[in-house]
Amino acid sequence: MALVLTGAWGLRHVASMLSRRLILVGLCTLPLPAHASLRRYELEPRASRAGFVYWFKGVRRQGEMPIGHADFQIDPSNLAASSTDVTLRADKVRTGFFLVTGILKGASVLDTDRYPTIRFVSTAVRPAPSGRLTDGVKLRGDLTIRDVTQAVNFDAYFMRREGSAPDDLSRLTVRLAGRISRSSFGASGYRSLVGDKVELNVTMAMRAVD
Image (cartoon, rainbow, N blue to C red; front, side):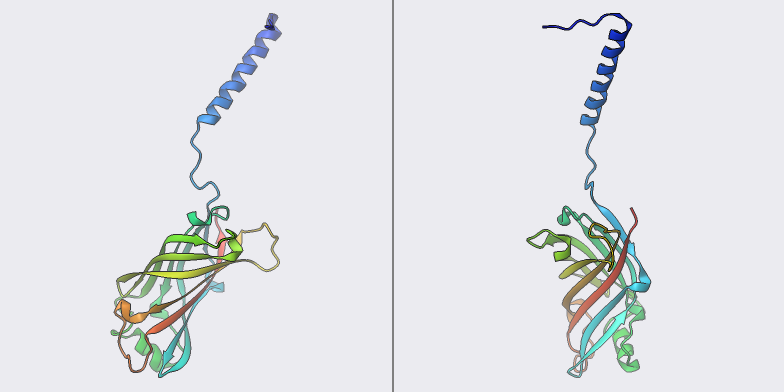
């Protein structure tokens, strides 16, 4: 049974219904933004450090270098869509031993006069089976040392700041951990003194910017 509307009120009602339908149709045809939940994080340098472990004459030693830049794009609901770009200041490396620091900066190891930075750019992110941010991810990416780029793997862990609400992801602490062979990047000097394997442990305080 058809309902017939007459008069000014009826015309206004029909016009209003048509207008709402046109708006709904328009919204349905708009393209959805890619990675709608993707959120960008930038580094808080004062609360961040890049530590590493090396072996000098067979003895385990530790050193560190500043983090020059770090940029994360994180989607908590789809971690595989996330990405990272981290740059370390190799020219500012510190070991606590003047001799060892000089060796690491030298031309046959890091050659920091020519290559002052170390850079990692992720190419793939594999979440933990749970898919939860707090359970971490496996990062695959390109690590560049001495202008030599190699594919490497890192474990990445994400932690909310202490005292923050369970759903507050505006500030995160991100930790990258992994092991590399320095000789695979051409940093093969002083083999009799410095071991080939280096363990990296990078801790970054990150703040959401959008």
